Length: 189
Image (cartoon, rainbow, N blue to C red; front, side, top):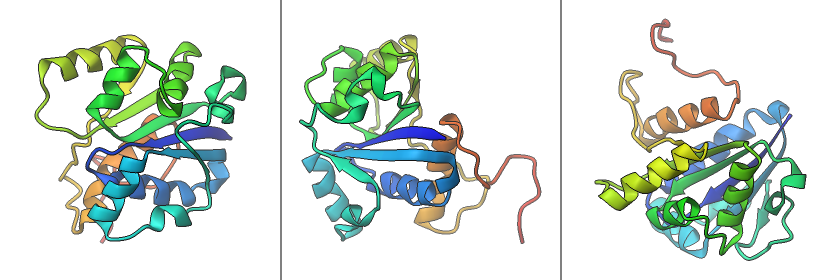
């Protein structure tokens, strides 16, 4: 049973966070905890992009960005995986620089120091050299950069299906088993 932290930052791409949370609800038998930390900017972007405040309807535990008593703020909490979706370039930079100025960056630091799984779903485009070097630094430290770059070979028909091509990949990286399109397999009719 996995213990997962999901951080949602203020980068555009709330659909990815929503898709990830929705998918996690369908695999409850694979995790014992899913805890969320969401920035105020993320809430504003979610409302702007989805037209709703339904992020607060999920049955997960939510923590404030300054709550350093959250269980995943320490390695002794033994969280397996942290997913930052979407991951703003500012958060990426602070993680790469080891700047633990809030719960998101502290938890990422903990995951890296404990040699556990950190997946950053970066969404900005294009990248500048600072972004690329920060991605390199996080990768060298053991993190995984998973750009929010959807695939098209599954022939997605809706925005939600398109977003799922990213979030299904993220869940694969996190070690979650789910039924999803696999290259070379038969398509469902």
